[in-house]
Amino acid sequence: MLKCLNIVLLICLSVAAYHYRHETVQLESVLAATDNDKADMRLELEKVRDESNLLRLVVMANLSKIADPIPNKLLTVTAYSSVELREFPEQQLLTASLSKPKEGAIAVSRDLFNQGWVFGKKVYIKNHGIFTITDLMGNSKTKHVDIYMNDQDRALQFGKKQIEVVLLDV
Image (cartoon, rainbow, N blue to C red; front, side, top):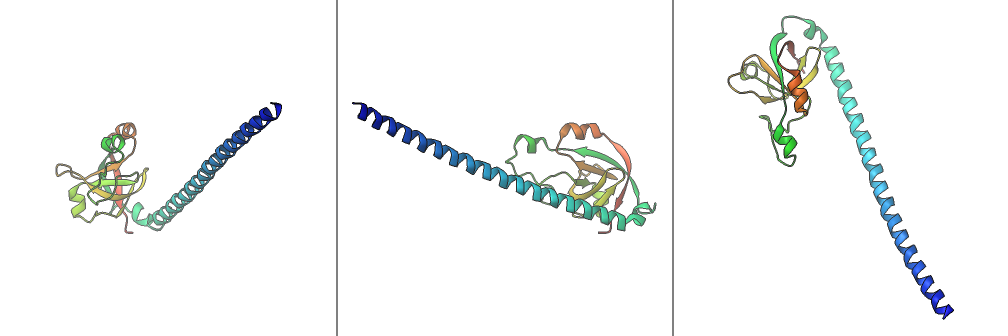
């Protein structure tokens, strides 16, 4: 009887050890995936830093044009966000240039677009940075730039401002 009890106990311990090992392997694979995600995020961060440094160099190279009052335009600058994109992230909302709305993008009024402020061109907005034209505004707006922001509250706080804006030759 004692021998049977020992065998049953041994079997129970073996099963428990198997389940423990199985759980350990699963947790190790989750940790490895997390490490891979961290590495991917680090690479993405470095890419953003590289792009940011490149844009800084472009601004420095074009500083004389930015500082020159002739190409500067005093424009109405506002901000917008996409409620639909936040509420339905799986939805494929696209800008007029057929790209997905993202931070660092702007929409320009059609009068500016007709003057060469076209998709893909870079724009410097004084004290706010460099942006890429990816969208168009409605026909009723003129001399107007709209900055895309992911955060609706931040876009509302931005308000409406008259700011010097420069189309960069890049």
